[in-house]
Image 1 (cartoon, helix red, strand yellow):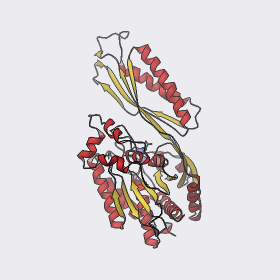
Image 2 (cartoon, helix red, strand yellow):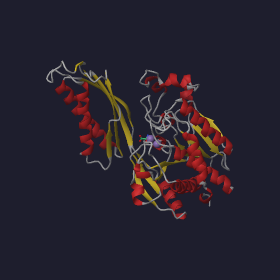
Image 3 (tube, helix red, strand yellow):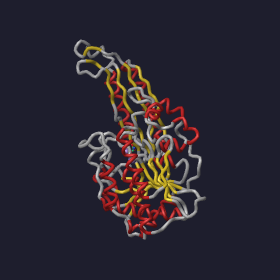
Length: 415
Ligand code: HGY
Ligand code: MN
Ligand code: MN
């Protein structure tokens, strides 16, 4: 069995090796897309792929493809992999577990001396996290056709640097965008392993999750313009306080999500930027991020519409101006049922317990689902913690998840 050839020590070595590419040692992992740490981590993964004898290529946005050729070069490949960029002060396993599980799954096939009919491509998708350019899933979004060449010039970082210019500065070729995207070739399907980023598997004591649906994000940027004035000299009745208006809008967002009838919906304000940001000045400007997720697209649309109405009412009451900029409004994904059955069957064959669940977080698979059948394998993370330095896994769970992934990939690559 291929699964028995999976080596935990190799997985751990790779995970520890790539963790060195980090802008905040001792403060969690910070590896933003297109930063020096990201560039170093890309080189690390490509060296692992080359050492394994995979055929390595990349596209103009920096998506990396490490291909294990099949016995039939003329049939569509099977894809696996994930991302290597992180949130600021994040963990070692979000995305990385999936990249190295894919590579270790192929390594196990090589050790077992087996080669499936279809090529298997282990991919690293560029920029899965919400980047400083205000767009997430850059690489997989481009592959799926949800990102255009014009978007590269519309999206800029807080310093005003356009994504296009950053790509050029780093030696990528964004002018080749329309030749390469959306993906022009057929792919038989995608399987991605990822940490659960919640605690359902851990609470159930189950090492493998079969993902049936992936929530999708709607992201907006909200800018509130009030009047900057003196904290002591301005009476409480004369204020047009941009922050307090933003705070009331944020609480309205939270209340709408808490009281929604949706099966699963979340709303988060993760960034808040005040101007001028001084203790004795009433902020004249507040800019904040809005992140709404649901596994039901209609529930998400309804919540955002209700919230827009409340934002307008709050702005009117507080006599401030408000500007809402949509960044992305992605549709949730129902994972491929057949691939889900393959994963369950392979877990059973390996005597590994498994359970079905949905994914609150989005993943590159959400984008790839536009192009091909896509499914995911989850493994537990300690206390459900992710996007934090305390993110941790049990290596034995990763070995089990990788074994299930490897056997499932092999099964699907022989279809
Ligand atoms: O935010 C997310 O859902 C993912 O972890 N990037
Ligand atoms: Mn992730
Ligand atoms: Mn993440």
